[in-house]
Length: 406
Image 1 (tube, one colour):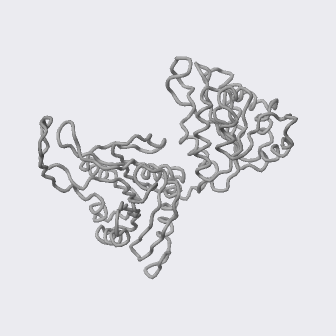
Image 2 (cartoon, rainbow, N blue to C red):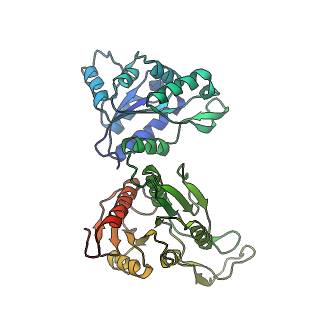
Image 3 (cartoon, rainbow, N blue to C red):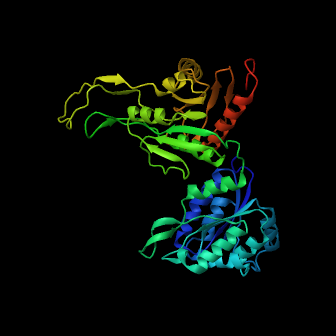
């Protein structure tokens, strides 16, 4: 359910946010898409065609009537074959042209020729987004089936503040994935996801934690939302933006996370415990900052085992746990699966470079309680999330107990 093999056109117009299209292009290609970039004349004042050509590995479309190009007509045909055209950033001028069917440059011609999905991510300054003409143009495009995202709110290039910022790259990608992968196979499900680390205080200043970035858990929440589920995301401290549409519950400590999980457990049909909960906390927390430069002995006590407690409650939810291992991955994973009493365990070797903590990719093996074992190739965490959710649905409907999945 990613972008492997998808043919995309990325249109870029003349906004200060044009530089963000470089990051968007990098993410689209990382997810497996083949991307052709089309720059408006004004966009070239902000970012050069060479930048996009280098990252895409393809010629950049600039002038429909370029006498040096023999490919103009072919690229109009490309618009007919493309799975989607994404315009990011899209100025108010582009919205007006698209709404009224004008085709006075390469990009607007491609929009008229497109037969696939069209996704537009606007960016504009001042109060332009609320201008009646822009409001009418956006309404007309949406009525036609074009997906026009809402701009972000914040500081703008003019120094003003308001709605007009280009949506974040991850939001654009998520909207595109939803357009191109409209499966709603989790409709009616209530998915509870935990993510990120916990912080266990030693004193008012210091704490024990771990290296979890939360990316895997957040990817699972996004994938479940995209596939139609109601999602509750309980997260320790991370630098990530919670996915729009999820019920977001921020926590700090393991005990906080336990209370939040038990509070929201009722009605959950799938529980995915992707958080890296600290195994220990300080037995005695100092009331004031610990001072001095000397040897310090800390007495630690175990934190509650949230995963095992959830499994023991037998609520009927399908329970998924995670195991970040550095050695004996298979043996440790099988042991944890049996000890916790859960349905599926996702194990990965975090000692490997480029996967696991802080990374955008992951490589995992899925162990289920009926004896199945399935290894996944290294892929972006969003793709891993989709594979895990698909495997959960498969396990819930497969015949048992003699079924073994490999």
